[in-house]
Length: 400
Image (cartoon, rainbow, N blue to C red):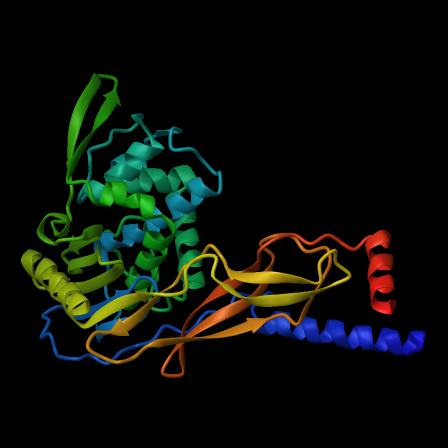
């Protein structure tokens, strides 16, 4: 083979590898579109809009006018809390940081913990007030703390909503008080609820707490103030984990309810329920419907060996490919004979050196030829680039 032919073959090989990398999602993550199941029965809900979603897969298990654009009331605070938790994760603040309450934050009406202008609270306690007591004043205080003003924070809320695909949503404030143009949908609320609960499960420490307290620190001294969770679901429904209530004159009664049973986490959202009790009853109906008709099966366990990938110019000729840290749960209808199947896509070759845990492919899950999820496949170990001694030894062994 001439040098020119060798270079040409090398370019073809590199091009093939690059093409496969892109197909496997090395450049951009590839995920299956959430599946929408047909309603098995009509639940006869009185709420104007409703949806039931599997939190792990995003699959829609039940929906009723789920894209109807309606005022979300304090369910707005799901986005507020998402940005708070993302800010702490990204190092923008610490939970122990002190927040001074502004006149604007203290002036919020509706549900509140009666913060006073000039009072200080930790970021953790203000977040607790939002999650447990649905405190408007605490929500605005944290919005100002994170973005400098409520308006600037609302802009970030809308940017994040766009990233999540919340096409029915426009936020005008950080707490959900009735304001013209402040709207969302049950579908969009499920999207942001999923993002919060899946990425920040630690919020359940607050959302499952029935009663707690904070200490007001003002010029008059210190005074304890009790918090009671606005979400009765955590007392009334087995496995309830949250999430957020909302009610105003325009929005009527809304609820994003979350629960987990037998490894399956569901999100049920109702909007514009006619009264206080109906919103809880109908969310429980939705959750019962989900657990009665669907279940989850675990996919391949972490560390499952699926094959080997060739390594070019490495101290080893191959490296094993295993399922990575991410485990998958496959949603299946109860009473059906549907079983998941897998397809493995591996890179044809790796160039040494190869680091341990390098992505080398994907395992794709199917039910009845429809993709339902995928997980990364990783290299089990590192492979160094071949040295001269090993290369000569391999040549001698081959020749002899």
